[in-house]
Image 1 (cartoon, rainbow, N blue to C red):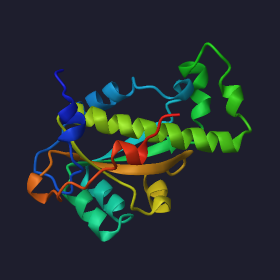
Image 2: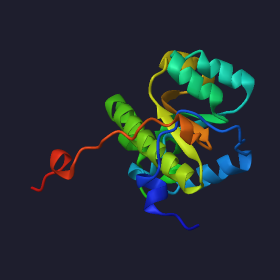
Image 3: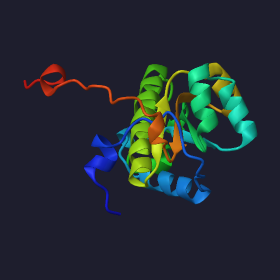
Length: 191
């Protein structure tokens, strides 16, 4: 794989529309198999993914999105619902076998909530970078009705929705002008 920083960062954009080009299940498996190696605290790996491709799945998803985001979902070949398993610590004996990490979380809901959110968000960032590395474009979104998404995609589980991300081959004609970013001096300092 020959990946450039431009492909991951400087040339990559948040896409609002997609070409009518499918994304294979094999590509989605490859995406997950790449991103799963990135670090999380105590290797807790709380992110869970639903790849929405079917018309039925898209209808459920669009029912939880405001109009501008629903249209993005409609156009995208795939939309990933990225969730956070609120019982991630149950997998720690498998994922972090050299310590009793599960004991750190049992009965400590504030720590469970913070760890699940922080690390599933990290994994969501890795997910975007892995998708870009594989030549896919992304459109991460946080504008949605989380309760509706939880009921539609995570019912009967301890998973809650963190965010959604459209995937496909972006239509560059639907890009907005690139928004500015903060300069180093505005966002960073030395101490």
